[in-house]
Structure formats: structure tokens, C-alpha cells
Length: 157
Image 1 (cartoon, rainbow, N blue to C red):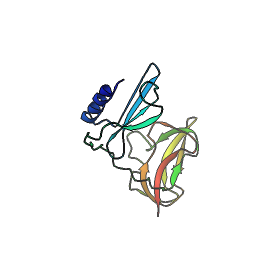
Image 2: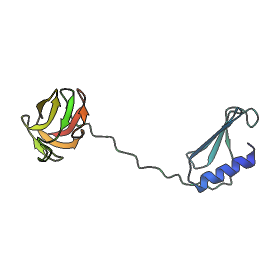
Image 3: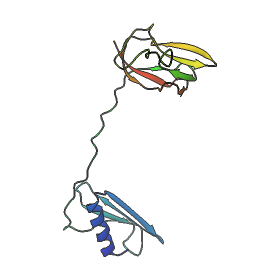
Image 4: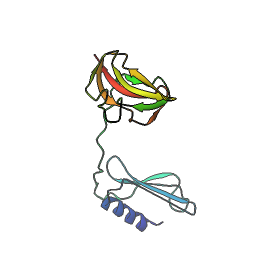
């Protein structure tokens, strides 16, 4: 791959908002990546093209293209969870046509039934065992759960 081909790849990267390109053929390996300043940087492990591994600014004349970045996700709250005490099938309601025991926003007490786990044809009511508000339902009704799997996230009262 010669310098003209590298420049063509950089133009394609800019036009398509790509942030990284990698090429490998016959022992030649090239990686082009946008640096933090938006300018392309070339890494090569080919003795034919550049000394290996090298960081080379390709062109100072290329205008920096802003790289679309996803908004950073805030760290998940570390709220306590209600975990499965057994292996079985999770059910959020007492019957398929019945309303769910709890939903997001439901206030629960230690004695509140939050779901049923079926194990060996036995329906086991699972209680919250703490007071608070359900903030997230982590299991899907009718799906298997493992011992210790978080079923609900709860904000303590």
C-alpha cells in the first residue's frame, strides 16, 4: 500500500465518519486511526512501508473531522437487589391473565410477595425481605432463573 492509497483511505474514512481502519495482506499490516485531535494517525508493521511499529502524522493539511461520540453512560446506581433463592422459572404474576405482583414504582415491605418461582412443579412465593420501592424488574416472566440471579432492583425505604 503506497502513500496515495493511504490518503484515499483517509478521505473515505472522513467522508464516512469512520474512526479506524485496518488492512493486512502478505505480511503488511496497516492501521489508520483518528487521534484525539481528529487528525489521522497511521500505524504499520510492514518493513516495506514504514519502520515497525511507527506513528506517523499523514498530512497536516487534512481538516479535522469531528468524530461522533456516544454520550457517556452514567454509572449504574448500586441499589440492592432481590435475588432468586433457587433455580426455577420466574413468574411475575399469580396467573397469566392476572396483574403482576409488583411493577416499577411499587412500594414493598419485607412480607410483600414480589413473584413466584416454579421449581419441580411447585410454585414458591418469593417475598421482598426488605422495605422499599421497586426501581427495576430484571427477570422476564416465564423465563428460567438461576440461584442468586437478581430479579428486582429496589430503593430501600
